Length: 558
Image (cartoon, rainbow, N blue to C red; front, side, top):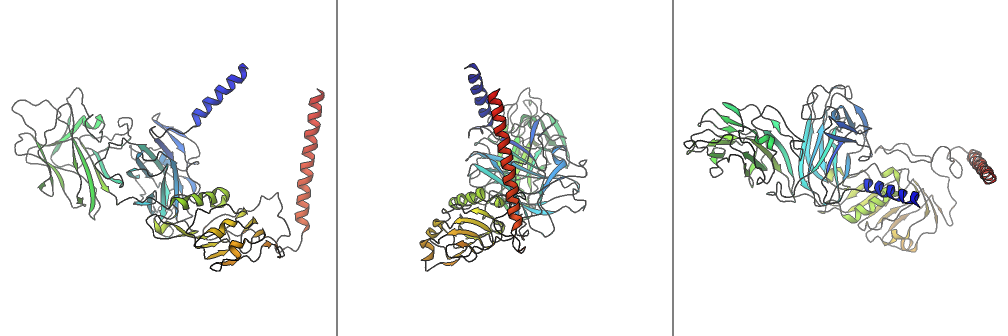
C-alpha cells in the first residue's frame, strides 16, 4: 500500500511538471532555432530546442559568430533553421488568449550556406504582415512586436518573397507583459519596434535588469551632449505605466547648454506611419534653490507637450501618440524658456502602430483543417494561419476574401494521402474538393453530401470501397468523379505507385518498406513479391508469438 501511495505521489508530481501554465502565469519562452538540444545562455535563462515548435525546415550551423552584438545571444545565434520549401513556414507556441506579448524574432546569417548572400524575406505573425527582413552578412538583425493574442496559440512565420532567397530564423523569444503597459494603443493593433535606447549609457541592457527582457541599446551620436549618472539613492518607477527598468534611469544624457536640444534617433521608415513614442525623464541630481530644469518636446520644431520637470528619485513618462511620422520627422528634447539648466533624457522607445489585426481564418475551417492534418501526416508541415496573409495561404488551399476568410478549395490531388478520409464537415464553404490520385480507402464519407456549396468532388484513382452515398449521387448541382476506385460494381484497380515529390515539396507517405501493398505493384506485372513479403511478416509474427508463449510457461513453472 505504501508503494502504491508513493507511486501516486510521483505521478502527481510528474503531471504537475508537464501541465501547461495557467492563463494567468507569465510567458517567458526562448527558442534556439536550428538547435537539436536545449541550452542555458550564460546562466541567465534557458533556450529551448525548436523541435516541438516547427514541422519543417533544415538546421544549419553558421560559419562565424564573432560579429553578433553583445545584446544578442552568441550561443543561440550560432544555429539557424532555413526553409527551402513552402511559401511560408511558421513556429506555433501555446500562450493564453488575451495575453499581451512582446515577441522578438532574431536573424543572424553568418554565411551558413557558404554563398555570402544574405536573403531578404517577409515576417508574419498570426496571419498579419509584420516586417520585411533584410538580413546581413556581418550583424544580427531582430524585430520586435507587442500585441494582444486572440487565440490560445501564436504563430510567427517567415515567407519567401524572392526566388532563390531562402528564409531563415535564428531565435524566437516570447515574453508576456502587464496589460497596463503600452495601453494607450488600441488592443486590436500591434506595436512594431523602431528603436529603444538607453540614452545616457555606453552599454546596452536587457534581462535580468529589465524583467520583461526588452533590449535597451546604448545610444550614441548625440552632438554636444554629455552623459550623467543619477545621484538619487533610489528611484521610484512604479507610476510609469510602461515600467522602464531602473538601470536605464540611473544614467541620462544632457546637452552642454540650454540652447542645444537632444534629437531622438527614431529609425522610422521613409513612409509616414502611425507612431507610439514614450520617453522617460528622471532628474539626476538634487537641484539647488536657484536651479531649474524644465523640458519641452518638439516635433518638427513645433512644441508637442506642456513643459515637464523631471522628478528627482522618480520618473516622468511622456508619450507621443495619435499622429504619423517618418524618417524625416524630427523629435527633439529642448530646455523650456523658464529653465536655466539644459535638457535631460534617460531613455526612450519608438514604435510604429499596425493596422487592425486580423481575427484569422474562420474558426470552423481551422477546426476542419486540424482534423485533416491530425489524420493525414503528410499535411502536418503546414502551419500558421491557413489563408492569411492572402498571398501566403497554404499551397493546397484557396480562400475567399472575407475579413475572416473561408476555405473554398482543397487541392490535394497526388499528395500521397492514405487511409480513411476524416470528417471535416465544419468546412461548409467548400466548393471544390480534389483528392484524385491518392490511396484513400474505406467508404466514401456521407458528410461530403452535406456540404451546401460543393460543386466539384474529384475522388478518382483512390481505393474507396462500398457504394456512393445518395446525397452525392443524386445531387444534380455536383460534378462527382469516382473512377478508378474499388466501389461496388467496379473492378478494383491496382494501387498507384508512390508519387514523386510534387512541386510543393511534400514527401510521399508511402507504406513502410517492410509491409507490402495489397494487390500487384503497378507496372510490374508480378504479384508474388507482395505475397512473399506477407508470408515473411506472418512467419516473423508466428515465431515471436511462440517465443513469448514458451517464456510464459517457463516463468509459470518457476
